[in-house]
Figure 1 (tube, helix red, strand yellow):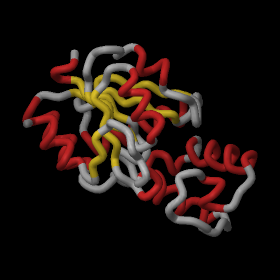
Figure 2 (cartoon, one colour; figure 1 turned 180 degrees about the vertical axis):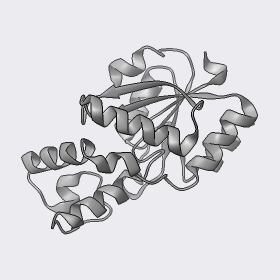
Figure 3 (cartoon, one colour; figure 1 turned 135 degrees about the vertical axis):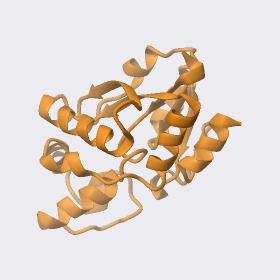
Figure 4 (cartoon, helix red, strand yellow; figure 1 turned 90 degrees about the vertical axis):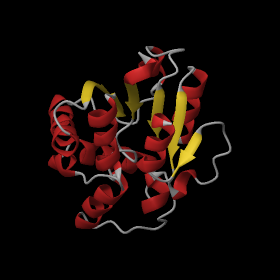
Length: 191
């Protein structure tokens, strides 16, 4: 399995969730407080209950269908698939809502093509990825993530973890690779 499967999160890895959520929040009258914070409570000075409610509302809204790609993700994910035969398994903490999942799948297919993703694993909003990654335990598959804790879980599961660089994970000191772009991931995978 390891040779041709790449595991990937979606938000903050393939899609610019932070940007899309920011547009949605502004449209709903919320003001950005700390652009470098990962946690939505800090970004928008919200209580925990408001944060959970708003993130779930966004993740289950029609906006999830049109989140723009992150940086150079389209170009290099497609190259890995088309030129090198890699297939991708999406593992994302989006929502248990089947309609939200359908919209995310449509967005992935529209952005990356109909054959890039072989498997979609949808977890509830904010859910840990430990159980989903356990299926790949010891496989050495590449695991691309933006959340530091999830990158480390991948390492613990015997995966080759790659952290997509963002201001909110700049202080990462773990063993995962930390890359700014999918070009860097492409270079690692194809070297």
